[in-house]
Image 1 (cartoon, rainbow, N blue to C red):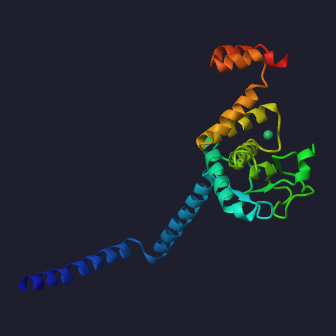
Image 2 (image 1 turned 90 degrees about the horizontal axis):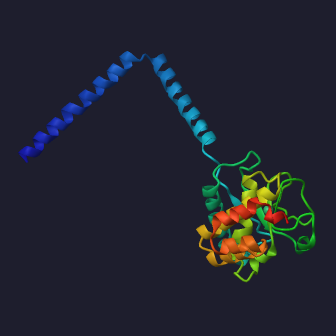
Image 3 (image 1 turned 180 degrees about the vertical axis):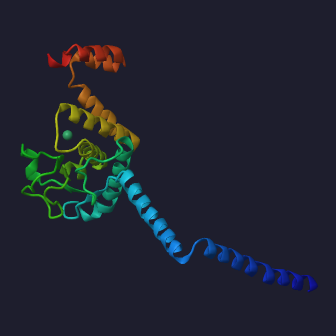
Length: 243
Ligand SMILES: [Zn+2]
């Protein structure tokens, strides 16, 4: 009991004295006007820091699946795949171009009629005026992605096809979807193959590689099969593809 009393005594006397003393010294060193200026200065610095941080950190790629064209029964599952794809594409190609919409990219299933339409064969990224057949969620003059309806019914349960198409289009967005040429297309396919591997869709990836390889001249095909990369590169540089 006696010990307890002693402890209480020290607790009561020391801290209030110390606190009062330090407060007094702050008041003496910083008169009221200076204290206000100091607080305003600190607040301004915090706002500026937040602004610079926001400006410096890249905007994450966000894909919003369209509820009108994606079936309700598969919406959640496919939105989760789209999120994974967006994250992986950001890891492969960090940063955004100026045309990237802060609100995210709307992705929808293209109308069946578009499959035979040379104007906008899906999968495709659109940036200009709204086209006939686009859903309500697609706003003109903002980036939106139309995928093929095969993403719902392909032999790979649609998933891998969806990953391939969405990645390919997001790669276009990263390289500025307003421009397209063979080199851009080659890079976009390469990014798709990389993301398919990252997300574990190896069967689909290998089949796609095989499909593309079989379109090449036989000399290059054989070099690729033997993994003779120098020979393949030499054939490539010799213009074998143009013959
Ligand atoms: Zn493309």
